[in-house]
Image (tube, rainbow, N blue to C red; front, side, top):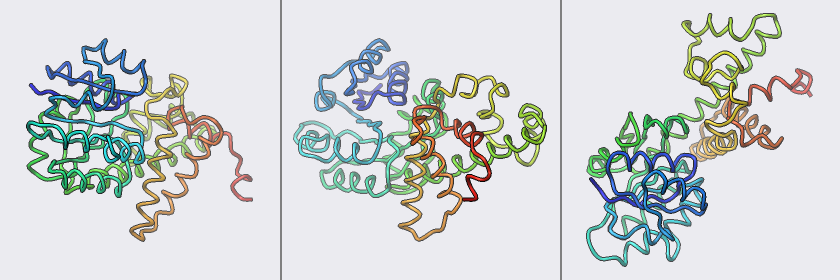
Length: 306
């Protein structure tokens, strides 16, 4: 079993760290939120008073943070994790960032870690809070094969599917593409469900027909946005997340920034991104991203033809 420092104990990081504790690892964690720290301690983790304190004796350092700026701040600034670790004696830990961030930030942190003599992987996840709680996340890993081999047993304590996507930053590329596909899929599914209902076909009946048909998707069968169809979906919990619309808006924006940098046209991605942003602009960003179904249902065709 390993000694692990875990920075970022929010809706995703908290249960991920708790699963590492369940797997028998010694996990010391830090978060800016006292409630998150208390929940982590209740799950058997060791609370640290600061991120730097959590690093003492760690064989692995894991971060799960909201976005690129926070990742850069925590890892790169003076007094950040790389700076603190560089001044410590003993064996060098493997560094793992599980945040979903822009590819440029992933590369920047990796390069600074490499300069300081540390190996690092980017390992963003898919599966939402349910996957984090149940230990069934998918990890999309960018880094060397050697670092991947070292990290894989640890990641297996938090996830079910662990894939090396390629070199540094490729985990983020995979995550951005995955979430762009999901974001577009949820919008298309929502439009079809609304159209069917307005024409007299209930969402439940359309689900029954489409689930085994060519339009089948995870969003339809496991996460249907129409209330009353899939009991476990957020739509039956007043759209409690799951995966917040604000996070989907962030990830869709990441996909569009990446598409622009690569000069790749993604018109469906751009349109879907605008819908999730509008959900957030109307104050619903903390609801599950499948709430886009409700937002679309409130729109009139004339609104889109102006």
